[in-house]
Image (cartoon, helix red, strand yellow):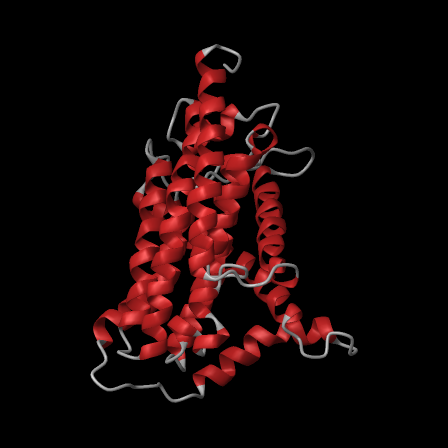
Length: 313
């Protein structure tokens, strides 16, 4: 791909991810509506992201004593950028920005980068509640990261490759989500975790006034909110590529199928807030190490045995 074509593809990926992220954002506003039975609820939900944007732009930036502004602002600005980079290598029909032979490693490296950014968002303001939120996230992330790594290893083992396009090709005839349900579920749960969505939103909990975002106002608050929805959208798109066949589907173009799968999955993850309460970080540590890690290892072992014995090509 030539340089101008690469720039055009990068801009297209950024615009597409932003537009798709609006759908779960609207759903989130609808679920947060204080008057869900009132007429015009979907119209209010559709306008809610823009209303919040206008209000936030009119707010004065919050400031705290001896804040580390450089690190705090770096975290706020970098979260949306990392989400865009997560989606940069995903194949979408005939369009792919870069078909890297280590695409899955790229995703995992960016996921770990999110660790640093959420903690820096809590550290930067030099305030109690954000710092507590940052440390809560580290405890939570340590509990889902190892299961996530083994979850993305399973498709790589089945496809004999770390390249996203090879993983998609290996799902011809049967999606990996069908016979790797544990890996798929753990991956989706991890997306919820690094996006700070319910039930894994304890680092941004109401008991600490919003946690990592407690001291944010104005443009920084907009950016960190956009980062959360961009992260869940990029994570859902990656799940669609790794486990749902990416653009595989009848009648419609591959790119349309990928967008549809991403939207449905992202909305399902956002809607979890209606069904599941927030899980405390200390409780999730037990779940992560005693439940998620063993079952994900068993899933990976089964996939490896099937590949070695030749049951899977």
